[in-house]
Every structure is written in C-alpha cells, then in structure tokens.
Image (cartoon, rainbow, N blue to C red; front, side, top):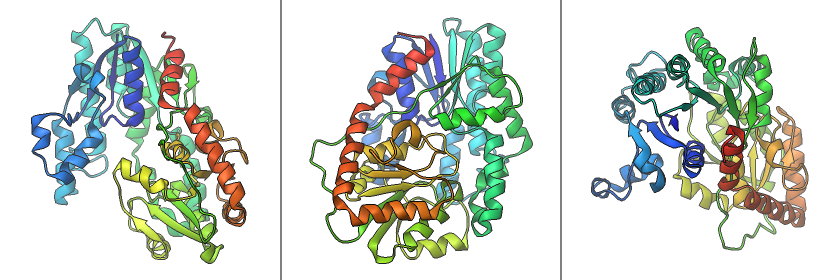
Length: 406
C-alpha cells in the first residue's frame, strides 16, 4: 500500500492519488488542507472564502484515505491575507512554503514508523527528504515526483536570461533558493528508487545531475473533459490571444509582449496571472493589455472559450497544465520545447512549437492565424480532438503502468 504526500494537492496530485486508489493501492493520502464542499461547516463560509477553499477539495473517493497536517499552512494563508509577510518569507519564515513542505515531510516520516502496512511512499520535490530517509531505513519503496525541471538546468537558463533581458530579471524569483534547499533537492533525488516526470523536457534537465539516478518515467498529465457545446473561432477582427500563468520571465513574458506588440491592432491580448515581484518593465507591458490577477479554475476555462490562441512561451517548465486546459477548450497553443508542448502537440497540425526567446517566431505564427481564419479553426479543432484523446484517465493509466501496477 502506498502513502502519497503533498502539501497542497493540486490537480495532478489528485489524479496520481486516484490512480493508486483505482488500483487498490492507496493506503493514505497526506496533505495540509482538505476541503469538503458538502460539509455543514463549508456551507457557513462566505462565498469568496468558499471559492478559495474549493481549490483544496479532493474527489470523494479519496476522502477516507486523507490525513491532514494543517496548522502551519493555515498560518501561512492567514499571514498572507493579513499582509504579514515576515512569517511566510521565502525559506526563513516559520510558515513559509518551505517550512510547510518540510513540516509535512517530517510528519509523514514519523507516520511510516507506525504503519508497517504502508510498503511504498510517493512524494514530491521539496517534501521528500525525511520521508525517503525513513522509508529507506524501513525498507519501503520510494517514488519521487519531480513536477518541474532540475534546478541546475534552471540556474543556467536564468543566468542567460538575466543578461538577455535585465529589465525583467527581478521576476526570476527561483534564483533566490539557498544552497541548503538545493542540497535537499539533490538528497531527495539520490534517495528515490523511481523518478516520475511529466515531460521529456524535465527528464532531459536531469542530465545535469552530478551522479547516477534511479530510472526515470515520463508520464504527461491529462486534459480536462472538453465541453459539449460547439466551439467557434473568430472569423474577423483582432485575433483573441490569451496568456495564463505567473508573471515571471521564466515564462518568457517579454517575448510574448514583443510578439504581440509587433502586430499592433491585429491582436487583442488578455493576461491572467499575479505578479511575483516588482518590475517596472512588466508594469509598462501590462498597461497596454487586458490584465486579470486571478480567476477560479472554472472561470479560467470559460475565459479560454472566448479566445482563439494561447501563447505560453516558457523558458523553463515541468509541464504547463494550462496547455492541456487550453487545448480542451479548442485554443491553438503556441509554446516552446521547454514545456510539455512536444509531448502533446504535433507542430503545425494541432498547435505550434517555437524556439525559446524568439518573439519573431511567435509573431509569425500569430499573424498566420490572424490572416487565415480557416487555418485557425482547423488547428483549434485538431487541438480539441487531441485533448479528448488525452484525458486524465489516460494519465492515471500511464502512471499505473510506470509504477508497475495493474
């Protein structure tokens, strides 16, 4: 039986747990918060709070397996809402994201000592060091899920980017990680018996690891179920272009704005994402476009259905769930090889793969779709069909195969 742990339980984590549940192998699921939308308490919450809490909901089938370790995560969320940034400061705060991950990691490690029926652990980057140490000592199987590329490869990308686009360097916040945090990442990798990644790009970045690694299995995530309603694309007027993601230069934002700027009135750009740092260059770029800081997931999907194209020009990504989400809503996706794009898209058949740092290539693809609305509808329809073939049930099946389970 598996113990799976992750502090926040995002979409891919939930489906990883479901994959184990469907195989009859999920013993326990450990997380920080688990919201039950059907509980009496949840119905008493204000609408905005309830909507936010719903992000931590799990499928009903998983609820009997869920264990929570909540207090530090509750403190983190509370301090952020009150504007108290000290307690949640990067790495140093007692309720920082890193502190939350490590607290759950230590709690799970203690749990293993008392539960001999848990013969395997499935843990994620930054939350596996103590768990793997305990599991190894107890002779339990250790599965490591790396949701984004390896840190040494990221540092190299950032060094180049800081020189190429210095005005955007402040948004490359991942470069602030301490040596101790990076050593812990390497410790986790060294302790794994199997490494699961969501894209070939992530697998390739592990070539920078200075030592031998466990076998690596690539299991791309799934797409949401497409809506039943018919999809239409704009037949005239500006091309409706969308970006969804954090407002970081890791996502290639400066190249997106340059590409759209070259097309003038031919493109209408909507940007959905929150700032990760103060950056005058970003503020200036956003001023000329429609910007939304955040939306609930269902509203993101609804917004996608009102757009034609998603541009996701990331320089460094583990997967990019927004790609499959956009394809499920019939958007033509323009992305780079440094995402899961090559695992999901056949270039020029159901989307486009363009080089990183290439605003001209993005602009050319947008102009081609703006000028040829028949091509836009054709590629959008193919993207939709591809998403239907790559639902979350496919991910769960492939994950069980990677783990050697039925």
